[in-house]
Length: 92
Image (cartoon, rainbow, N blue to C red; front, side, top):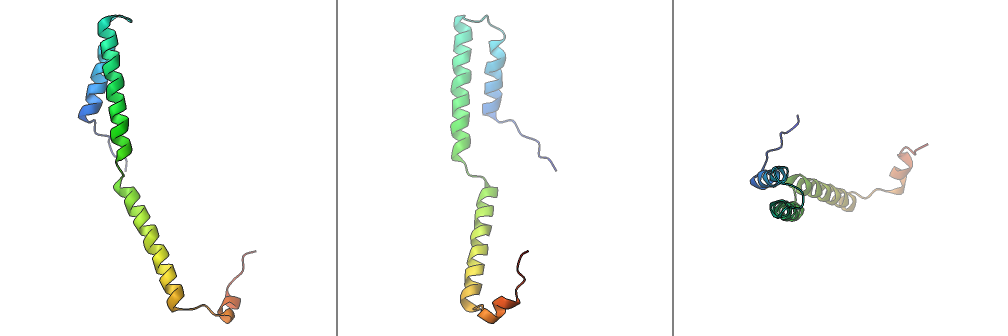
């Protein structure tokens, strides 16, 4: 039902850099170095995530296009006449 999120190598490195922050005093050179690394790794993760298109999105778009194509094809082959339109139920 729910999929477990697998931690990637990039996620592990970000967590390692954030954990390293707690080992140094705020404002020290090592703290600033770890902070810069965590910031750069986070930017890299955002760039990596935004460039990928999920397979689910592609499947939804393809299904919608197929449905639209089927409706258009049906309308071009089977013309709905004015008599048939009068038999349709009208919304209240």
